[in-house]
Amino acid sequence: SPHGTRVQGAGPGYSPTRYRSTLISKNGRSVPSEREPIISETTRPAIFVSDRSQATFSWGNAVITRGLISTRTIPTTAFLMFMVMFITARVLNAQQADSITETQKSAAVDSISNALIESYIFLDTAEDVRDHLQTRLRDGAYDDLATPLSFTRQLTTDMQSISHDLHLRVYVQRPLPTDPSERPDPEEQARQQLEGMRRVNNIGYLKFNGFVEATLAGPVAVAAMNFLANADALIIDLRDNGGGAPSMIQLLSSYFFEEPVHLNDFYTRQTDEWEQSWTQAHVEGPRMTDVPIFILTSGRTFSAAEEFTNNLKQLERATIVGETTRGGAHPVISRIFQCEGLTIRITIPFSRAVNPINGMNWEGTGIEPHISVPAEDALERAIEEARRVIGRAR
Image (tube, rainbow, N blue to C red):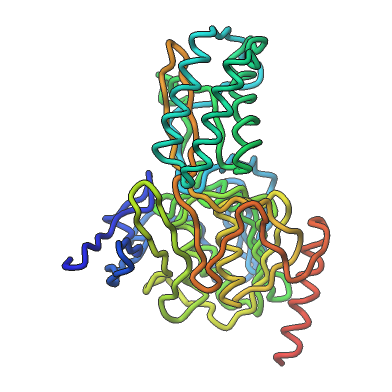
């Protein structure tokens, strides 16, 4: 455009051909981006609810009935990243006993230091972390660490001691299994994001343990929103949600507003660019623009789950019930390095969120709830508040 504005994806895994709602600008200039539905039409069923009274349809680990959905326990997938969802390799587990050499340690510190200077959102902090790691290496602080796992864990501790950034982490990486059947199944991860859904006394309940990319998990989310569309109030449980993909935030949020709404801004130091995040102009099924929303939080609520919470809090569209969240507002990129035979991965916060309403974010502080209660009591309290609001409306 004449203003130098371009539209691009929010990060790895983002599909601009199917999902275009962000805007990037320089020098404060911006133009609206083209908006398209997140979820294209598909014949693949996600969740089906029969119109027949008491009919039941079983899918995966969820059992769905008219007016109530009960779920068996579904293992929680680790969603530790804000912008990067599917890492195509596995982290070594605690039983990994490979040895590590001093040459590999030195190469790892050098690689991490260079990556931080190049990409970390705050250059002065990147320089401080670099200097700290190199000093620790030179002073022999890592000499007694005999395995890659113990070394990368200590690097993470040392980096966070300076940056206080919980997204900044180092992992040991090993290649993806050659057998495709042993690789992570993205569709199974998409199913696992939604652990529970039910509607009791016309109060809807959704429990998300993570936010999977909308191109994968969109059909599940759309079916859930449509099933609960006629609820008098909606409770969204994010107490065990460690983060995930921004596209799911935008998809879910789009059901709560009549027109496109500006949700959040992101600034990237490396490119000196701003990106805006908006709700979608189109959703599949009815919107819930007048339905009271309650979001449950805990000290485990992190990253993208915090963005979703903060967006709706600042827009005065939801009541937050529970505990102050963990405090991670920096989207990350993932970098993999070969260090003299040792493969490591580092997640680097490359951008920072800036709320368009208050000009702030929740990094290091978390998001305070409107109603502060222990996490284990949040659901019961939210139900009480929902009943009170429903009764007042009637």
